Structures are given as structure tokens and as C-alpha cells.
Figure 1 (cartoon, rainbow, N blue to C red):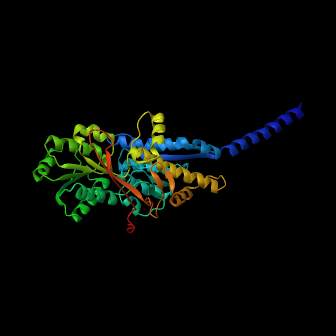
Figure 2 (figure 1 turned 45 degrees about the vertical axis):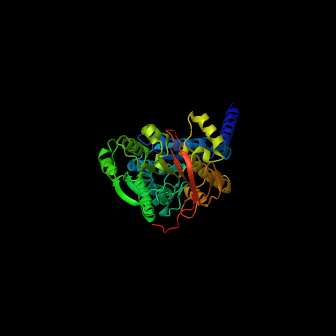
Figure 3 (figure 1 turned 180 degrees about the vertical axis):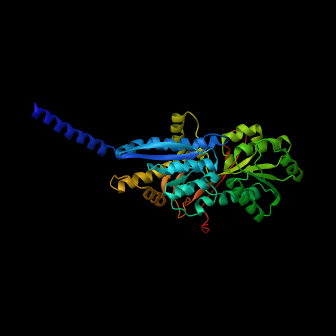
Length: 395
């Protein structure tokens, strides 16, 4: 009886070790990717598409990572378009060692302070939407973006206004944010080079009544009104301008690139222009199959930043995958992932070929000018410019 009991104990121990070893070899751990974008509040429509695009990329990569021995987990965060919320989230993200990639943000004013937290732990960040120059001009080795920059987007809008629309004067309004004022300043400086008269330059945080601003605007009768900001203000400003019989051409940047712009401005949106760093679906040959997958998964049509959210996530996931393979199957460090992303060359994404320069900008980025010919999103592409990022000094 004692011998039999001893044998049972020995076999149990051996098979127990075998089971533990099997689990260890079969599953090496967890790898997470996170997103940060506004999922609630006035800008949630754009933030949600970033999140859903990245989520689809993660879901499609689960099997690949499973074969490498890792569970891939997607973790979305709502930064509410508020810097203090983004920073608080960033601290939680940085404290989770399994998170090897952050896709985000939408707002440059949120991305800038949050990325300071990511830098401290070398957590790789790939932005699908942050256009402020400061994002990459700091030269952080872990911070990248797949979209263009405001110091190109703003001037492209100004050149289009001067050369294509033949306007002679402009009234500029911005939302006082890093993004909105940054792109408005870039537009203003380029417009001045083309001899356009700057009849007004106002910053506002108004959300409801733009009447006091429209009165002097109407008196000066500009050929064009340029708004640097997001659709929730821009759409309402345009609607109230038209109600007060201000017939100036209206233009803004990619913050207006949303179906919400049409919902807010209504029929008054017809005739307005916007520039964007994220073209519409029909601007990309690879988009049809992706749009079908997106709608099957989420039950809605994808918008521009959904594609860029997907591509930002896919570039990061491919870099992580290749790093695991180069390490013989081991889990990479954050620094190794950040290094691999910066070196990643010519990834063929939904939005085209993606490669980063020494600052983390796309080697080349496309910029689009679109017109709302009617109250329908997206607008019609009227001009496309492909341009490299400026080579200016790091700040």
C-alpha cells in the first residue's frame, strides 16, 4: 500500500510538472495594445472611429500572435479630448508592462502631455490623427504618426484659397487649442505670402452663440472665412453665419472631416471646403475590402480616421510580430518595439505605403482638399497633394 501511494505521488508530481511546462511552452504571456481617443463628449464621433479601426486590426492579428505563443489583448481608453484625462490614462497605461503599443490620440493638445509619460518608459506611440508640429519635432524615438502635419496642411489650404478659389481676403477664427490655433497660424502665414488680406483673427471657446463674432465678420465682408478647429464648433459657426447672411466661402482643416459636420450644419454645409490628412474611402485602392470588413464587424460605415486608426495599429503590430521572431520567440521590451517601429519601411496599409523619417513623421504624406457639394459626407476630393515633412530643427 505504501509503495502504491508513493508511486501515485511520484506520477502526480511528474505529470503536474508536465502540465505546467506545457502551459508555459504553449502560452508565453499576454501582449496588449491600447488606444487613447475621445469616446465620450463632443468629439466622440471621430475618436470612436480611431478606436474601432485599431480594434479591428487587433482582432485580425489575434491568430498570428496566438501562433507565436501570446494572447493579444486590445485595451481602449477614453481621453475625453481633455489633456488631464489623457495624462491620467497615460500613467495607467505606462504602469501596465504588457502594453507594448499605444495608438492615439485624436487631439494634439492631449497627445503632447500624454506622450511625455510614454517617453519615460519608451512605450511606442503611433498617432493616426495628431497633426500639430510639436508632436514629432521633439524628436522622441518612440513617438510616430501616420498622418501629415499642420505646417503643411494649413499652407495647402491657403494656397488652394489663393490659387484655385482666387480669394483676395480672409477672416480667420480658431478654437484656442494647440491644434486649432496651430493650423490657423500656418494658414494665416501662408495666406499672407500670397497677398491675401487678413481682415480678422479671433480665438474663441464659444459652443453656442457665435453672433457677437459674426457681426464684425459680416461688416468686413471677407471672401473666405477659415476656421481652425473641430466640427462641433465649426459646423455651428457655419450654420449661424449663413443664417445671418454671411455668404463668404467657408474652409477648415481635418477637424471638420466627419459626418457630424453635416449633421450640425445641415444644408448650410453645401459649398464649404475642408482640408484633411485622411482622405475618404474612394481615395484609396485598398479601401473597399476594408470598408466591407469594418461594416460587417461594427455595423456602420467607416470614416477617414477609422482607416488611419487601423493602419497605425497594423504598423505597430507588424513591428511587434517581427521583433518576436527576431528574438527567437521571446517577448520584446518596449524599447525594442519602439526601435523596430521607427525602422519599419514601406508597410503597405489601407492608406498607402507607410515609412517613418528620423523624427517619426511619414516620409511622405497625402493631403486632400474636399468640397461639400451637398449636405452629404464625405465631400468631393478637388485636390490631392503628396508632400514630405519639413526638415526643420528639433525643438
